[in-house]
Amino acid sequence: MRIRTTALLMILLALALSAVSCRERTDRVRRDHGPFPIAENGKVGFVNAKGKVVIAPAFELGGDFYEGLAVVRRGDKYGFINKKGREVIKAEYTDAAHFHDGLAAVRKTGDGKDRWCYVNRKGKEVIPCRFKAAGMFSEGLAPAVQNSKWGYIDRKGRFVVDEAYDSAGPFHQGLARIALGGDNGFVNRNGRLMVNPQYGAAMNYSQGLAAVMRDGRWGYINDSRGFVIPMQFRDARSFYQDLAAVQVGDKWGFINRRGRLVIQPRFARAGDFSQGLAMAQSAGEDAKWGYVNRKGRLAIPAQFDFADSFSGGLARAATYTRDGSVSFGYINRKGDYAWGPQRYSKPADIAAIKEIMSGIGMYEEVY
Image (cartoon, rainbow, N blue to C red; front, side):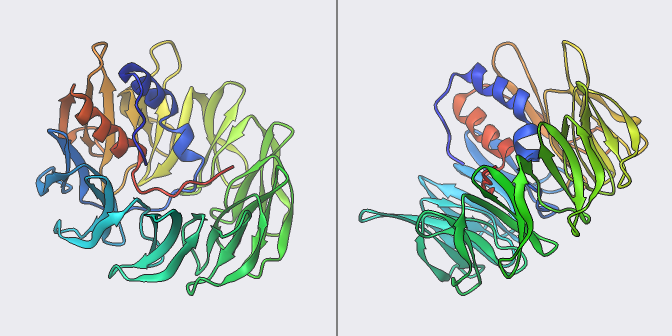
């Protein structure tokens, strides 16, 4: 969530190369269907699905709306605004993450302290600032660190699953990914190990299946711990809309929940399905991002250097130029721009766009 001082071209290159891989390794939480953040003259504002500015650019940074509120930054402090642009939670925090299950993690520093706590939608700190790290509430629990290990707290801030893990993710379908000694497994809401730590990597359950990796190969297990799709893929992502992106050799395609390839591997990279479309990067030297439908047909031609999942009928898209500028906008499901593209060349504008593309207010999961 913080801006790093890096050479402009390196920033752009990093974005181009990691637009999907960094974000797809976290389990996507559905954001609100707008308003959508934009940047003008170094400030962030918001547009609606028709591309009309509904919140004037006034913030140093701004993220997507979740549960009706969006993280924004004024000066060097973070707070939250509603969809009318009114600051409903004062910008007084060193850091902040988006709302989920009615709570958001916020960070306070000062007086030699650096701790996370949780606020409700009215801005009340309902769980005191005593955590060194804090994750997203999901299904009534959130991963948190008070001493040196991760455990799970309830909505009153009490540890209901002891601090025992090196990393921990949010609950999905009654199970949460944990890691111990470099191996990943899953616990239930009572803290019972349902899948012993044994995988080099794992993703949270989605549509009843979890992608897991052992000895460099990915497969899928169900909630009964049995393999339903054998370990055979070089890489894999979670299921969304009954399809999952998998890597076979050096190309990506899509499988159904039976493990059958329904979209043959022909893409350099691929993302998740959302609103009937998935990001897919063309193979070749001049690799570009486009979108495929569930039949594998290219619905939006590969033309972007950056692409994001659809939400509320729109998706972020950007192209880069040799002079270091960025053309950024929002496209609809036909590939037409609803807002933009707007060309940015000033460092402050590019920094704001970079944060919008990477997702300000996102919870970080350590794998």
